[in-house]
Image 1: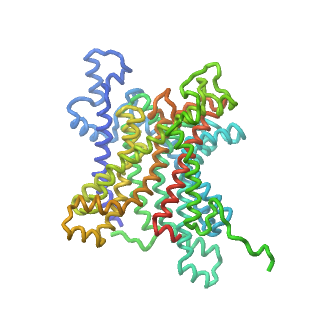
Image 2: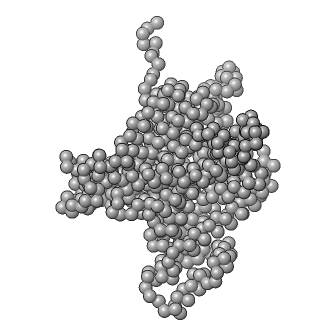
Length: 312
Length: 291
C-alpha cells in the first residue's frame, strides 16, 4: 500500500509539471505587456519598467522565467499580485478557508442527502419517492449552480427571510448560517449524480445471491440494506462522489461570484476582470494540484472500503 | 379478491416500470418536445418574436410581463423575450461547435490509440490524461482569460477540453472492434489501415459517438453559459443566456424576470439534451436495455 501510494505520487510529478508548464505558458502568451497591466495602462519611464520587470520575474527568455517561477513556486512563493501588490500566497491563504468550508459543508449535505435517498429509491423502486428522486436528480444535473443559488436567494432569503442573501458572516455560527444557501445550491449537482449512482448500485447489489441468502436467513431488512447491500454498493458511489469534489471546486467559483462570498472563487473572477495573471496562474495551479491529489486519494480509498482490493 | 388489489401497471412520463426502453423513450420524447422551440429559436429567431433584441427603450426599464413585453424588459428597456429567443443561438450553436471540434480531434485520436496500441496509444493517452488533470471549466477560464474573451475563444477552448473524454470513449470501443473477425478479414484482403479504421471500424462506433455527443451537448451548454455568466463569453450588447442571468442578478430584487427567464432557458435546454441522451443510450446500448 505504501509502495503503491509512493509510485502513484511519483507518477503524478510529470503530470503536475505539464500542468504548471501549461498554466505558466498560457499566461505568458497573453497579449499585452504585464508592466502596463500593473500600472493600469499608464506610461512609464524605462527605468521604472525595468524595476517592475525584475520584481515580477519577467527578466530573461520565457523558459528561464518558467524555471525560475517553478523554483520559487516549489518554495512556496507564487509571486505577487499585479493589482493588489500583495503576496499571492497570503492572498490565497486569506481566502482559502471560506472556500474549503463551503465545499466541505456542501459535500456533507450532498452525502447526507444523496446516499439515503438512493438507498430508499432502490428499496422502494417505482414508488413516488423513486420518481421524485429521479426528477430531483434530473434538475440537479441540469440547473446551473448560479441559477440554483439565485432561486435560493429569491425563495429563502427574499421570500421567506430564513437565510441571509449575501455575504459570509463573521463568527462560526453566522458563517454556517450564511453558507447554508450556497452550500445547498452547490450540493444539488452532487446529490443528483450520487443518488443516481447509489440507486443503480443498490439495485444491482439487491438482486445478487448473497442478499437472497441474507433474506433466507431472516435478517432484518435494515441489516440487509445497510450492512450487506450498501457496503457493496459503496465503491462506485465513493468514486463518483469524490470525483465530484473537482466539480465542487469549479462550482464554488461560480457560487461565490453569484452570492458575493469572498473566497478563492471570487479571487479568481476578480483576477480575470483585472488581468491579474499571477493570481490566475497561482489559483488555477493550486486547484489543479488539489484536484489531482483528490483523484489519487479516491483510488487509495477503495482499498479501505473494499477489502478485496489490495494494492501492490 | 377486491378490485383495488389488482392495479393496472403504471405508465406515463418518468414512471418507467422497470425502466423499460419504452418508458425511457417517453422521457426522450419529452426531451425532444422541449428541444423543438429551442431549436426553432436557434435557427429562425425572427419567427418567435418581432422585436429586435437590442432595441432599447430607457423609458420602459425593468417592466413586468405584459401583452407588449411577454417577459417584461431589462434595465435598458430591452425586451426579455426577444433577448431570450435570440440568446438561444450563441449557446446552442456554440455547444454544437464544441462537440464537433471535440469529435474531429477526439475520434481520430481514439481510433489510432485503440487500433495501433503500443507506443502510439501510450503517447496519445498520456497527453490526454494530462489534460484531464485540469478541472475542465477552470482550464477554460484560464485559456479564455489568456486569449481574449468572446464566444469564439470559449467554443474553441471547450472543444479542445472535451477531446479527452471523446477520445477515451472511442479508444475503448475501438479496442473491442479491433479483435472482431471483420477487421482481420479486412487486413487479409490487404486493406490499408486508414480504410479499415475509417470505413469499417468507424461506422460501428456511430452509436457510441451519438450518445456521447448528446450528453456532451448538455455539458457544453452548461459550460458556455457559465463562462458567459462570468463575462468571458458573448460580449454585450448581443443577447446570450449566461450574460442575461449575470446582468439580471444586479436588479434581482426589483424585477427577477430577466434573470429567472434566462436561468430557466439554460436549464430546459440542458434537461432536454440529458433526456434525449439517456433515451438514446438505453436504445443503443444493449447492456442498458436489459435494466
